[in-house]
Amino acid sequence: MATPSIVRFGLAVKSARSVLQFCPNGTVAYESVAISSSDYSNLAFFEQFAAAAYCPLNNRDNAGGTKITCPAGNCPLVESNDVISVYEFENSLKTDVTGYVAIDNTRALTVLAFRGSQSVRNFVTDANFPARQTDICPSCTAHAGFWDSWVEARPGVMAALKTAAASHPNNRVAIVGHSLGGAIADLAAAEIRKSGVTADLYTYGAPRIAGATLSNFITNQNMGGNFRVTHKDDPVPRLPPIVLGFVHISPEYYISSPNDVVPTANDITKYTGAVNLLGNSGNNPLNIDLSAHGWYFNAISACGGSDFEFKK
Image (tube, rainbow, N blue to C red; front, side, top):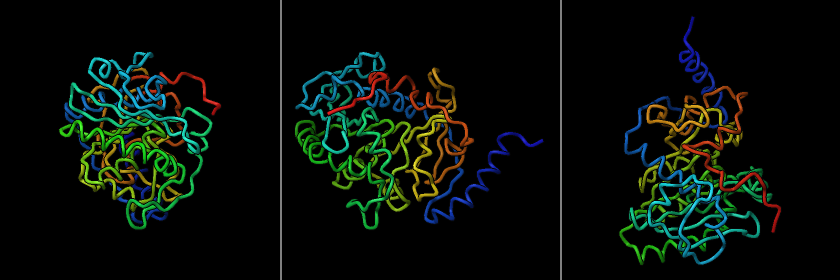
């Protein structure tokens, strides 16, 4: 009898042929490698900046000056450092894009963090699937809702990063986000790198954002590392569907451990390719676990609570 891993690989190969009918420019890949201890530490650390973006005290639409904290207790590594916001934003008119820019004086970092879906306008943004032309690169289209979110955030974010670079010129820049926040982080990273800034990108449970042209552009910018983290049976990274022409940036860091358990380095596998069918997308599409979407090293969205924002 064939082993599950062999069966899964065979299904992936069969699926890859189908995928290429809809996404001929996507790169299907099956390479997998174990992750290093330093990568593991960074994945766990920057996840907590993404978690902090859900905390209302960190995104109050002001000039900053707030110590980044998480009342839910899910960002202790961030709280133990000297991390102060320099720009906070929320409640944009169309998409309610929300997040902050902060300086980590302990680790010499400038961090841009985007919150995931928490309001009615966020969920409307998620559902705005049609592709829209961007100004990031020629013929580069993106999910219209995600692009609109970045365009709304862009003026304030770019100005804040410019100010932060002037006062902290030696800081490393990192861009983080979970879910919708990860999708916006992808687009922000593309533009920030295009401006000449080296920036590392850490996303958790992010959906697909674009067709192969833009996704491959981001993958190949070589202006900072890409760390796209997924969790077993999290349904969000499988959206929008590949059949609509959407693919991911590469590589993927796939967490195979169950919910409510802190993953170890042995639970995380790195896969390459814009269309990779051995990580999150290689699981049975009927296995949908919404709790997996909320568990990345810890309860990443716990600070947002269970109530959606019906405002403003």
